[in-house]
Every structure is written in C-alpha cells, then in structure tokens.
Image (cartoon, rainbow, N blue to C red; front, top):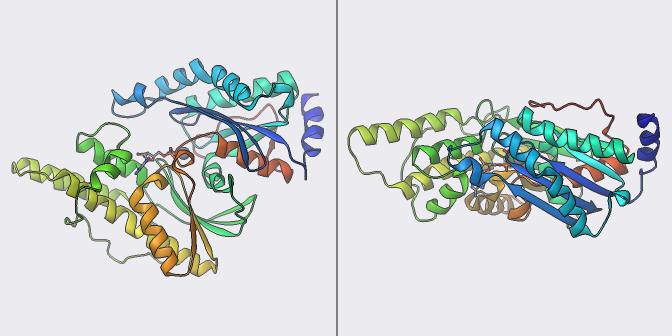
Length: 347
Ligand code: KG4
Ligand code: ZN
C-alpha cells in the first residue's frame, strides 16, 4: 500500500519544484537539511568530532549511538529553521552508502520511519554523488563537467554527464587521500581529524622533503595511489626518530601536502582534457584543503578550464548536499526507494 501510494506521489514530483529533506549519517556527522531547488532552507550538522577525538579516529559503534541520540532533534531543528512542518516536505533523501554500516542504518531507519508514518516518498542517495551535488547549491552549474572527489573514504575523478548520470574515469587503487592526511597527522601527534591540522601547519612550512617518487606521473588509466606515499612518510618519521633527528613538522606537512595534491590535480586536468570538457568541480572533505583549492584553480585556469568548488561548510559531510542530490533525482523521477531500502556500506 505504502509503495503504491508514495510511488504515485513521487511520480507527481517530476518536473516540479519539490521541498526536499536530506538526512546524512554515514560517518561522524549527523546532518539534516531542507532544500527547495538550489536554495537551502535549513542545514543542521551535529558533529561528533569532539567525541571521537580522544580515540584518535572514528569509533564506529560510538558513532552509531551518537547518531541515535541526536537524529530526532536534528530533524526538529531543520524543520524549525525552515519554518516548515513535516506535512510540507515533498520527499526525503537519505544517504544509504557508502559509509559505516551502523551509522548509515540510523539515518536510513529514521528516513524510512518518517516516510512510512507520513506517506512521503523516499529517495536513496549515494554519498559521493551527494558531495558532487554540493556544487549545485546556490549556483547555476550545469553538466557535463569533470568532478574530483577527494574525501576521507574516496578519491576519484568523475565525468558527470547529466544530473543523474555519473561515470568514474579514474580512482585510487588503494587508500583515499583523506585517509592519508589523517594517518600522517596521527603520526605527527596532531588531533583528529588530521586534514585541517596539516592544512594549517603546511602554511608555515616549505615543501623541501621528497618522500616518494611517483614513477610515471599521471598514469594512463588515470588511477591514483596513496598507500606508497603514506608508507614513505611513516618510514621517514620512523627513521628520523630512531636517529634522534629533529623533525620539522611544518615542512613535513607542506611536503606531504604537495606530493599528495599535485598528482591529483594533474590527473584531474588530464581527465578533463581527455573528455573534452571545459569545467572542473571539486568535492569532498579534502576539497576544504587550501593548497588543493589554490593549486587546482591556478593549474586549471592555466589550461583553459573553469574551476569551481563549494564553500568550506559544504565540503565536509552535510545534508544540504544529500537533499540537493535527492531534489535532482526527484525532478527526473529517479532513485525512488521503498521501505525495503537497506544501508550499503561499500556502495
Ligand atoms: O567528506 P568527508 O567529510 O567525509 C568522508 O566522506 O570521508 O571527508 C573527511 C576527510 C577527513 O579525512 C579530513 O581529514 C579531510 O576530509 N579534511 C581535510 C581538510 N578538511 C577536512 N583534509 C585536508 N585539508 C583540509 N582542510
Ligand atoms: Zn563525505
């Protein structure tokens, strides 16, 4: 019954201008947002960073419990900020992957419960596509374009052919770039999450250390790798400590950042040239990195591309990007989900 009724309601949203709620709980932010078109009516993020900091990283079970504690109040607050009631929400988009299974299930269960109770259609949202959609908020960006997604769990270059058409053209073979940032920061004794700390310290240092020689520059298949660079920094720090040598932390941060980011920028530019596209957009938590933002802009523009990126608050995990993704699905009648929707940790 629910499926038939809400599927019809979902179909009716096609080509319209629905009010969409987004729910995000894939990792360590509980987030709820409401959008109408490219306009954000509310964007609530309850970060768990302070909770996980003392463990040096995200503890999955603690993350799930924290999501459970705050998800209802985040939903209430988003409605309050947007001056709306649940009856005025046309559909709900929820992140169903990728992410931590227990964490994802909190958002998915909450979204399904509201949709069932209120007869609201449900839209399934891929977290990575959500990151890319942060670039549509308050802009007039239109596909096709190349998008570099650099986050804690993913590093890939996408060709975005349409609002609902995403194609991977290059990706990391092993670790994600954000994972490498966090690991190097931990070895330097910096608090979690390490990316912003390395960003801050890199500005005080110089890229004087060569950790790892990337053998052939941009690879023919546009693949990337971060485990070799990560191990090279581990070995460098280990050797220096064994020899009791002074470690210049800002120089380590600047050198690591340059090596991690330069190849990423080069790979993205080769991808854009190969695909014959004129616009490059940046997305994901590492898109907040000041060196990456600057380098991609300078190199991209030098090569004749328009380079765009979201404001800092929309780079790291948030639900405005998830609601935006769901809005674009709903107006084209895509990605409807029924109540059998399950979390997909490795989507
Ligand atoms: O997209 P995100 O919030 O979560 C995932 O989907 O993974 O990305 C989090 C990642 C973390 O690894 C964090 O250290 C990194 O983004 N990050 C940064 C910066 N801000 C966040 N990395 C480098 N520089 C930054 N300013
Ligand atoms: Zn993310």
